[in-house]
Length: 301
DNA sequence: GTTGAGCGTT
Image (cartoon, rainbow, N blue to C red; front, side):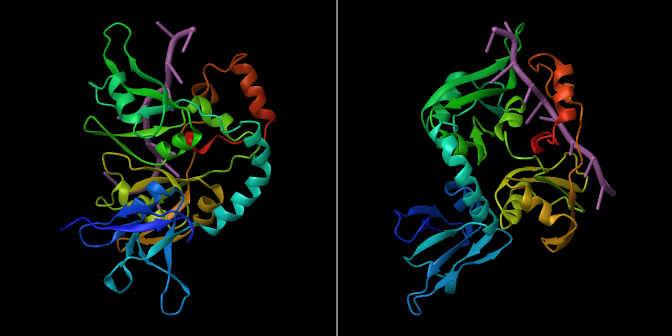
């Protein structure tokens, strides 16, 4: 089948971007979210009624109205919670943005093939934006890659985009995340509630992509983890803790199966394991945690 | 079969 693209924009008057469809003519919500992080659906203006209409969304798959996408421009939907949250954050972050708060940080790149070099990393990540630094971590004695590395971009926008998607590097899927050493500091004045949910009663045929596509309808998904070998559960992390908390206790139907959602319990909560190199030593870190309202950042939990 | 990999010699 010939490749079909539909035109999608953040606003009716904005420059649209072309998003690829699947072989069956549907569009994956994840394809939309790859360009518009946080997207939870699409809408369009019905030419007859001039009203906005929602595009049918079933488990992360968007279906063409009347089985034909036509030449309309589709507009991205974002979760209501995100919008409200964005407005709240806007006021607070306007100051930070002016101060250059949205500075980039090193991102850890996990799952690299052993053969991948720093030049390979640079070549790959430059396709997203200007790269300031790449590293492949190696065993000091043997020089063998440890299978992970770091990258840093000039633009914060590039960083956001890179974190939001998976990366095929030299034939392996890799993830880019804020490194553990940075997560704690990334949200200095937000109390840390859990952004991560436990998904019980999963079946073996549920893939990380399918879970991501399914949960995207509730809010921006930043991580999906399925333990291997199969253990009938998974973890899904949202960008927004309110989205995660709202789902806890629910039974949801995924691929016809009822799964149960609950809070993710802490993996380890040994702060010395998490921050072994805390400036001033781990005793001062422990004291700080005792006094603090913070819980562990969800990517540690 | 309901609680998870891996995190940086500076």
